[in-house]
Amino acid sequence: MKWNEFADWGRKVADWTQDYHLTVGDRPVRARTEPGEVFNALPETPPETPQAMEDIFEDFENIVMPGITHWQHPRFFAYFNSNASAPSVLAEFLSSAIAPQCMLWQTSPAATEMETRMMDWLRQALDLPSEYEGVIQDSASSATLAAVLTMREKALNWTGNTQGLPGQTPLRIYCSSEVHTSVDRAIWVAGIGQDNLIRIPIQGDWRGMDPVALEAAIKTDIAAGLTPAGVILCVGGTGTGATDPVAECLDVAEKYGLYTHVDAAWAGSAMICPEFRHYWPGIERADSIVFNPHKWLGVQFDCCAHFLRSPDDLVRTLAIKPEYLKTHGKDGIINYSEWSVPLGRRFRALKIWFVIRTYGLEGLRDRLRNHVNWSVALHDKLAQTPDFEIVTIPMWSLFTFRYAPKGADDLDALNQRLVDAINDDGRIYLTQTRVDGDLVIRFQAGHFEATEQDVMMAYDVITEIAGGLA
Image (cartoon, rainbow, N blue to C red):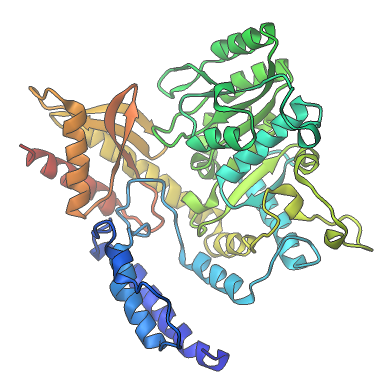
């Protein structure tokens, strides 16, 4: 393809994209292909000669699209939505078009300086203190890894990167059983080891970490000659929305000089609404905070906001400065590649800029409030329906329930059958999780363009299909 042919296809793709988003609600939410179906539809060998774009696009529609689960579907209630609002898609298009590599200030000054400004916009939106500075990571998993590496280096007096972990006193990191599995992976990658990730018991309706048990575990490890390194807190866990008592846990961490990281990957977006900030009192004392605008704020994946009370600790942990990455003759610049594990960086700040300017914070708040209110209304209706029981209370727009008709002897199997039947039906998409060992059904509303009718339709689908199970 020549560049002078690009505009025609760009218009076709734009028209296709608009039509897709306007009609995606008419499609089954989850892909209906069988394993291997897409793979076997693709030729075994690459083409030796050029092929027409018309043929390529036809194959895209006939081969690729049937194998897509529609994350932009208004009745995608399974995982946390990966929203792609219209202005975000346009910004991503422009970013792809100019294709900058934004690893250093000098390689893309606009990208670096916009990132600094956009992270401060988000900081203000969450009402975090001005001392916090931010960096855009690809995902919360990367931010958590960066935090764990910083915990490791601080606990080892900045010798881990040079001397390695062999011969060092084992490090201990503390979290609840409700944290995302990205915490486990960060522990692996950082070389700390799964056995040194200490799970603290949870309590209460919020299923949050018990601060008394946290302190007891730290004391036990110190007495055993081990080295406590950090605490990872959860605000809005993936399974049930579990949320630790932030202030009380930070009291304990500060008492023992431990680095703290708060994973609010999903629920952090809700903190642009002042009425939800009671879920993380004391947050202004955390060393590291992460949330994903790509989950609930309409900013296309991938885009993760990572805030730091002392960025110098992170930079000291990750920065490598060979001569070819130095910018001479410019003072006070930031090179964000020193704030993240990858060297290469995309121009992610552009889509934050587009989205916030297009909707304004109040427009974004309206969407989040609607999702929460509609989800609570669905919860209330299910709670009053015979044969259904609520397992965990609504946390923002997330709650769990199960089908428990009288006489059913294997509720785990029954609820898995229900989830599978709902997803095969195609009108909505749910997923299962486990709460205290029991298999339950998880509901979460968060699609950017979802309506109240979309959310309440879930009630009709759930009860209709449950009634048809033998």
